[in-house]
Image (tube, rainbow, N blue to C red; front, side, top):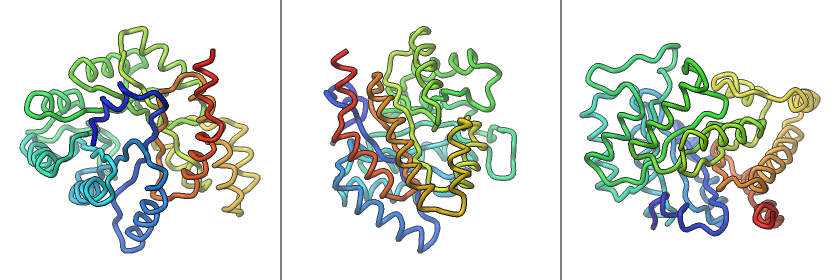
Length: 299
């Protein structure tokens, strides 16, 4: 197994990864099991498991990561947030991850718990994800990633301030970055250029979410303030009521999006799977067949 920072440093081709979330119902368990079964043969470089607001899926996250790593033989990374957790709580989770053989952690501040619009530090907890990175570097030996926001974090005072916070996370010990989802590649390319200009030199991996439903993607884009191109919205609305047609467009759009990202030098793609396999499997298969990154390598 490998530390993700080493996977990036030694990679000769793009690094592909899948993101899952812990299920909360019997049907959710079935969906996740099916997705894992279908996507395992795609041989991702690693997978990640999200962490619910307020630690609501804390146990589920750790259980999923350990199962994926030890039973399925895939490298797995656990997400960890500062929400509703004291430093002692965070240490307890990190201890359990370390003792279970987890080597990779995505350090996040996290969003406010459901029903709250403002971020509030927990008494005895941490204010910023940078502090979580510092805690991990000072007391543990994980390969640490963190989040990046091509369209600027919704709570940031400015794009420049957001980048300064990001550089602080990297300076503290984050060794790779995964972006929030976006649907217009111009935001990613501009963001990478600005990040490099202030000295952020770690891999910046685009997070891509294949569109599976109109209402679902609208809801998620509103929560994250991700811009939806007018043409994409128009084509989606033209397919409203036909879920299969929406998913087909989602696969086609994400394939084009990933192809351009890789052709222009992105170090890989982090697929936000929503615990579904067909879209991600189709997109990654097409990318491996067409190998758009070779266009970048060839100039």
